[in-house]
Figure 1 (cartoon, rainbow, N blue to C red):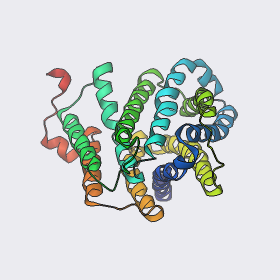
Figure 2: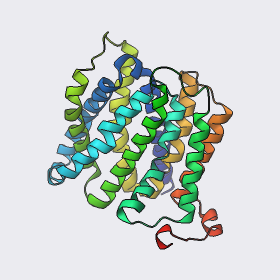
Figure 3: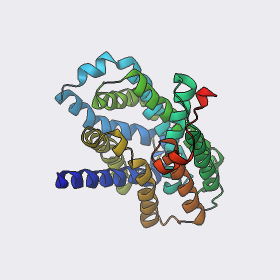
Figure 4: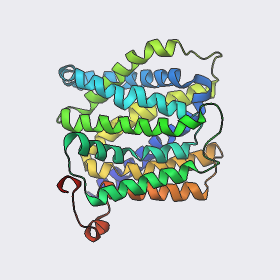
Length: 304
């Protein structure tokens, strides 16, 4: 039992390290591939891993039966936000990308409240405030954003991508309950690869990308998308979604580390303070800080 628990947490750390590296690979590949073509290669390489797995494990009927909702999720969880992140990677450090990606729980909770009538506690609202305060701190870091054409749009692009992720998570929770996660992922990748094809063909790289950049794209698609999602759903089956979601806290730490080691990105006071505020906000919004829950009354916004 102890060995099994240790194995689960080792896999949790490994998954966080892999997903944390995705922002590093985006930073490496985006300049040579361009955002659209990079995302096309990413989803295409991932679907080559996930679709055969879906067929072999008998999850194809789930995909076919729910294709309309999965199509919407392909737009909001992969095709569009992947492109926004790839664009932002041209201007924003890997660490900042990953920290801003951690704002997804805020948008998820807000959309659940506004659209689906889910209650929003005072603690959750305070958590959102802390989280977005952290984003503001990060935006003022002069070393995190490379100024140039399009740089002013990088942060809004990432936040909009996180908003789309929030929509996708709510669709999965409310419209696809009980549907295989493998079917959702494989279907989303399949639809995304088809949707992006005509756009990516208009955005082919002018010169052939170098071998190290192709390796980064392969790692991004097969490792950070295909393999990572397989690990993610296996961990959910073993230890539950509440424990698995701890990757939200670990991914920025690994991403900052990889960016510093391989891209010489600076770890500034802005980075540390912004990261702490965002992760504190995530903990408050997701209810992972029971000590604070006892101190702040559980008044719900829906009741006021």
